[in-house]
Image (cartoon, rainbow, N blue to C red; front, side, top):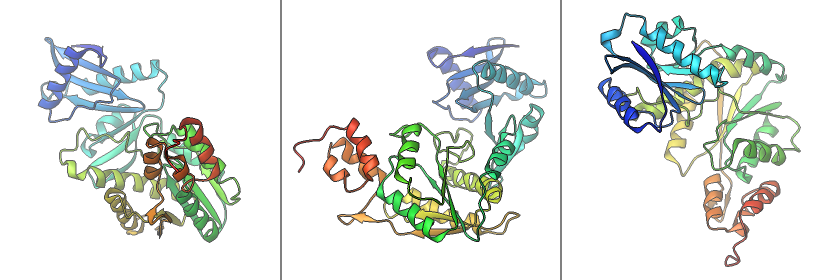
Length: 338
């Protein structure tokens, strides 16, 4: 059996990997940066890929199961990941494969609906929680908000202000991804600038434990209609079991979502998952009405649409001065707009 690396640019070999994955009943993940394949008699019998910090498309043919191929494949994948400076790695898999990944040094973090589990190679979640403990604040009501802010708008500002007024302290978590229109660093800076006057708010840099839809793998989920529900439950279980107890969080604030059905469903699922019987304390979900301008809710998607139209004047009514100043550096004012 031989192992080799395959880059996405190798069209012919990627085609063979796609065929192997299809044979295994798995979808090909287009974001993989590099594959490791195992071959016997020139036929692929196992493969695995690396996308950022996540290992994906891991598959082993039945013909070689029981030969220790899983351990060999993971060893090769880890060797490649470590050589490229990726020390912290995650794998999303089915619960039935938990023991296999544990034998390769991965540790369990959490799961969703008995259908998907998240594991990591170094158990850095404990280190993350140690850092969080240093930021814990006292109070009867400790609020939390998870935001993308793509970009930071007056709607975001309103929600944080409301939480700030109702809570002894508020922990704001920024979704860590660069799949957004605005980069993570730009979004973070605009949030800090837009909330600089609020003294009872801690802004947390993005974390690998606030799961991003951009990194959530779906290649082994046969029922694609379950993807959003599984993503939601895993994300919220990690929040309830690990993050909230560490910071003493009692409430989570969200804006009502009248426009996006997916986000609205996420909010409704949040209420159920964070309040149902569990070993961790329940978290009360507080929904706040969205503020509007010209009878339309203020949203980041509306701002992005207006940016494409170069309508800076309209944008000025939807974002704080700090966000507006940044947008003006990348979007020239359209003189055709009043």
